[in-house]
Length: 133
Image (cartoon, rainbow, N blue to C red):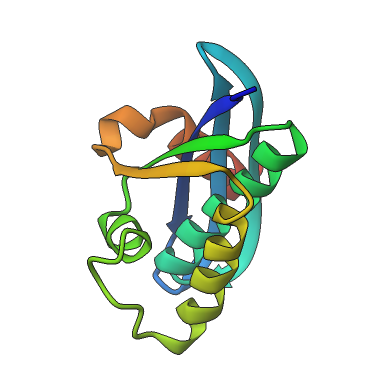
């Protein structure tokens, strides 16, 4: 049986590199399944974006998803995952590969770019983690 979940994910770095965090929100239909925001230490924005994706994918698998729709406002990450851009930065290559390995555990996936305004809850979780709330 197909169990589709939607993953909204976001990463932030204040300083780039600087103190970073990720946030993600996982839905099935219109129902909130799980959400999380955590600090990451000093990272770049792109590292934070990938960490949000990776942690969100792991959560989706734990909750039994077999089809995942990813929505992110990181155009770079979305284009890399969809094969439009190459991953040139060495420290991103390992995160990219981890994400691709996780994606292979789903029967199908979609990776979509959305506007920042559509990703408010994941962004709020990042900021709450960075602000210590």
